[in-house]
Amino acid sequence: MNKDSMISECLDSIRHNGKKGLITFITAGDPNMRDTVEIALGMAEAGADIIELGIPFSDPLADGPVIQQASQRALGSGTTMARIFEGVKEIRKTCSKPLVLMGYYNPIYKYGIRRFAADAFQAGINGLIVPDLPHEESGPLQDAARETGIDLIPLVAPTTTGLRMEKIAADARGFVYCVSVTGVTGARQEINEDLETFTGMVRRHTDLPLAVGFGIAGPEQAARTALHCDAVVVGSAIVSIIAESGKASASGPEVEKLVRLIRSALDQH
Image 1 (cartoon, helix red, strand yellow):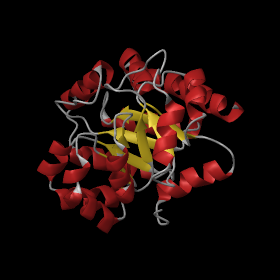
Image 2 (spheres, one colour):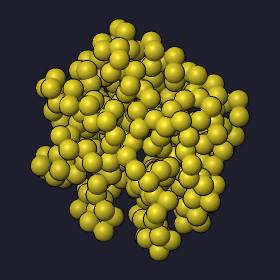
Image 3 (cartoon, helix red, strand yellow):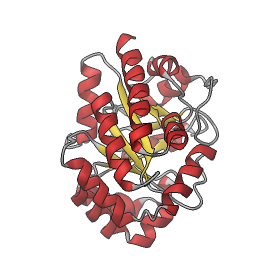
Image 4 (tube, helix red, strand yellow):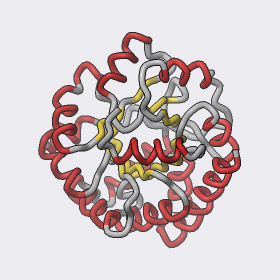
């Protein structure tokens, strides 16, 4: 395990206290970066343990309609990598919780792998998730992230073979993101995969914390999912609130309300 990881330490501390972690996702720049900063700080205050910011991209293959549309709104508002880093710096002024960027490889590659890792670390980023980067091709980004101290967090799915999972786990840092469904992101009424078997298989290959995401819609579902992992990731349900409400002045309180409800449900189970 990476003992220098702020993310691992955060989730290990929660696990040690018999609790479950809450990771919340929003798309950076949706509806604009100023509101992103305000909403992120509100989520941290409401009980999120780790804040995940999505880097908007024109072709987000792993995402369902809700986050695809959020990416389009963010790009339409003029969101760039540089502006995201400035927003992260603003969040960092008052938030000490781990911050993770989730984005596709193309914008990172175009920005420059080493430059990206250095600028992300300088802004205050602790972790990075790249859903379309196969483990076999992740070496350059792994090296750049490791040099700066950023955790490159892998994703594994129910379809990941044991042999491949072993290789992925060997390089994993921060936590292992367990994709709960075979498909794209999006809130679902039910997650039908056998999470107990799936996460049990992942645990055979790593002692890092396990987080389950893709499809968690609300408090009760989060609590049921958390029985089989160390943390849950909630994204589309939050992004939907932002889409419906628009500005942070309207969506912020509603997002915080949902985060508090999920936090309470996790703490009661």
